[in-house]
Image 1: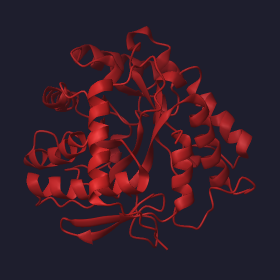
Image 2: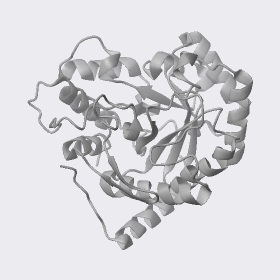
Image 3: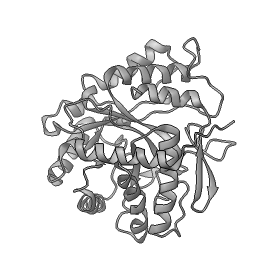
Image 4: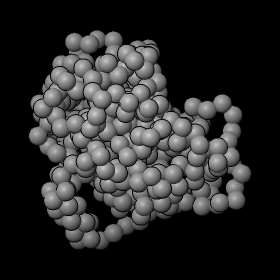
Amino acid sequence: MPVDFPQPSHARSIRRLLIGVLAMLAGAPLASADTSDFRGVNWAVLGDNFVEGSLILYGLAESDDYDTVRAKADAVYTGFEDNLAVNTVRLPVNTHTVGSDWWDAYSGVIDSATDRGFKVILAYWEDGAASEGRVNDMYAWNTMWDTVTDQYGDNTLVHFEPMNEPHGYSATDWVDMAAAWVNRHSSVPKERILIGGSGYSADAKPICADSRLDGTLLSYHIYTFFSSGEKDYDGWVQSFKDGLGDCASRAITTEFGAPMDSGLDYSDANSSDNFVQYIRALTDSMRELNMGSTYWPAIGGKITSGQDDDWYSIQKLHGSGTDLTLSTPNPSGVDRLHHGWGL
């Protein structure tokens, strides 16, 4: 049964005020420090972000104008704050969205987040899964990022991830491409740039080994389906650290997740379930290494067979129009998320 965690409106207002003050005092986190201040989730398109068209996040409608998007985003972010205690949201961008009429409205999702003190990670998703992990139009990609960085480059809460899961490139080619992006956007402070690991963002080592990318943050992904066969707890700890190498101080686990709809108890240290051991191993490791994370997904994502959303979703969306609320399907999953964040 979904569990809601309501709070009085004045409590939410005080929290937002404190978050805003801390953001102004602290500014963006330093790449040389730990990344534990990134406590977040992904808000995705229902069906996933690999679309050859506009990115319509779950809960939004293409007919929404800026004010309607703002109102919906405000409701969703209130749920994220109250139910999950997040301070970061990772959002997709693509070449069909940025610069379009929809971008004028979509910007409300970003503006709503930063106005309440959230950090925002804007990550490029390739334009459809048929792109096979590559940028299929470099001119459009550069134009998109020029627009995004021009619009949000002065906002210290906004961070930029040139590409999500660049698996169509060799490690060498991807590092060269990432270095060219950093050079093109030299006005963006490096500590606000996240470079995905090679492959499916699962190998951070080539990124932190290249001096051209010194000072940037690293975007790191790890899922059970990246691995052949199941592992025990120690095996998942080793797998998590193998992909990181010595790069943990710069890395944020921007995608990881497990089923939240199947009744698994992630608080059970004696469980032999592969997903439970995976989540426990990852959250223990991130806590130990002072790493931040953005869980995949909060809402949206792939549609699981027989369901109307992604079974990994750590929140459930209810309501219609701008009257949106969120509930928590598995409190033990949230507990482990908080544990990984050091809460």
